[in-house]
Length: 98
Image 1 (cartoon, rainbow, N blue to C red):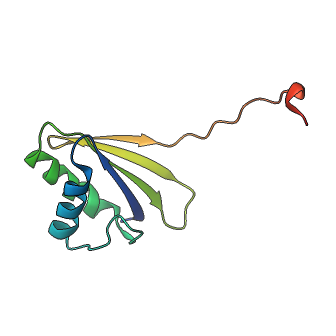
Image 2 (cartoon, rainbow, N blue to C red):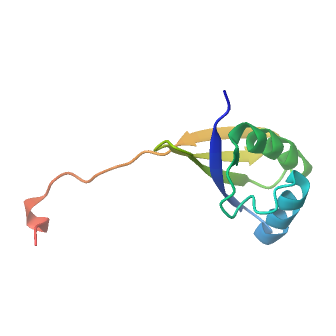
C-alpha cells in the first residue's frame, strides 16, 4: 500500500535549478508547494534523478497525510538514506518555571 506525503526539498548545490527541473520532469508543477503525492513515486523519482547529478546530496522531508509521522530522505548517486523524525522534550526543570 502506498502512502501519500507533502514534500519539502533541499540540495547541496543550485537549489532553485533543481526545484524547477524536478517539477518539470516529474509532471508535478507544485511538487514542493504542498501537493499531496505518492511517497513511492517521489522516492523512485529522486533515486533516478540523483544519478544524473552524482556529486550532489538531495533531501526530501515528507509528512505523511493523516498520520503524525515526519521523515527525511537523503539521495546521492542513486542511493538513499531514510531518517525518521524524533521528538525530544527537555526534562522538567523547576528553575525554568516563570
